[in-house]
Length: 77
Figure 1 (cartoon, rainbow, N blue to C red):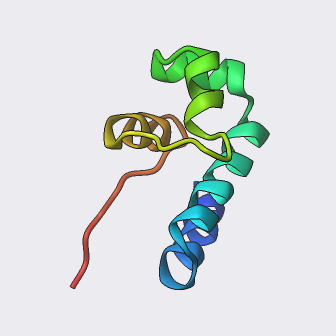
Figure 2 (figure 1 turned 60 degrees about the horizontal axis):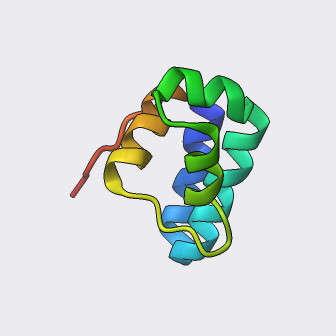
């Protein structure tokens, strides 16, 4: 989780939303979409749609995926 967090943090600082989505898709696929579907309760098909090139995942989807990856969303000043 620490490596994933550092990877995503770099995209949050300098990347576009599309690049951030691509990074999260890469992580999701490396984790395994079937395993991620089981851990999140979101169907594999819905995950593939959310992380497709034209995907636009909801905040709920992002939070469930991040939790399954051992991450949490935080806001810092």
